[in-house]
Length: 266
Length: 270
Image (cartoon, rainbow over all chains, first blue to last red; front, side):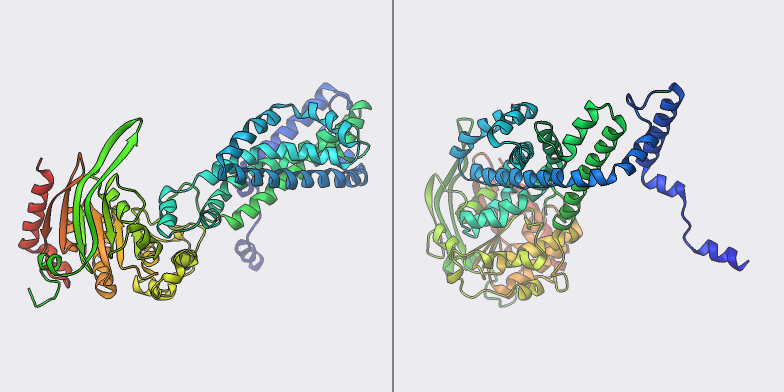
């Protein structure tokens, strides 16, 4: 009896409540189960499409190898993320301050954005060799445009009454910028950072496809050429997890900094 | 009605030195190559320490008039003087406070940091006659204990209190209010009206208050300036003889009803 009462007081783990809070988890389990079942039922060979269980085993087996190769890719992604976003923010500030600068740079930014990144990578290898530089550059280029566009929009999206308030207070242009424009643009900046954090990973991997002997990108190529599909899948799984983690980190920082609801008038 | 000095707004107009004088002001707005005359031939003298309500239909230019006084809009012709100086000078000297229709608080700043904002702006800071502290201001508007709240945690009425505290922190001699309580529910609005009268009596700031509520204009103003639209102009100025120390109960008197009826007739006249 005593044990019974204890059990009813203690919070019990219930799968049903987990699925109610995260319905996508259920979807994921169903997809993996169907995938596993289909591969086994149709006897699909591993080198064409591996079952999730095989991928999981390969993931464990390749863990030391993956760990070594994650480091350069992550560094390239982070470097590109920092450089691409920082230059986008600075150029956005210059554009908002001077319409002439905007006219000078904006069409060129659109042009760079329109060039396929896969085509740019070989050019960068020719320019910078096979070190970190071309990979960081691809990641930076991928991050640049979304942040530029969002930041220009954010810096312009100030409440007109707040602008009048600053003018009644005789605020200077730089006071208006630092006290009004820059803080108002933060939600726009974070929207861009959340998009570009996973993109930076893509950029680094694409960079590694062209002339690299290390990194997750190189592992993907190697696995493909050798028909090692389980390793290919395991590598993609790791790359995806890291991209999602970067997204999550940006989201956490955003929640600490932005406490107000965008679009509301206070 | 008691021996109050400012009792009888007409006499106040005649004897006190004006806080704001507008002579022959016209304002044009250009949109799509059409020029619209928003205000035409405005001649007003606002006495010092007066509480003037400006009542009019939407589009009559009453908000524009406040923006002319605060140097946010340049008139096409005519001249404005604020305490004997140009509007630009008065603005630079921080002699003008402005309360907007929305509280216009900066959402990333706490209540006290919002109130402190005017003190952080350099231009004119040295010429402020002696500002209040943010804490004093929040006490004045009845917001003690909410210093570190963020704007999204406050009700609409509380946000407007913060906006009033911010507008008054530099001790402006003139407070311009552009339908500040228009978005509030009626009970909150009545309460804010009483508070505003108390703040006015305590600070002796000249107030120019724009509204489209007849009852609000009657309850607040020593005079109600009735405006008409197309083009915006002043139709008539009606003195309200309730004295400064009017209690909320005046709103239920027959005299109050007579004022509102008269103001409504003026608004509806063509």
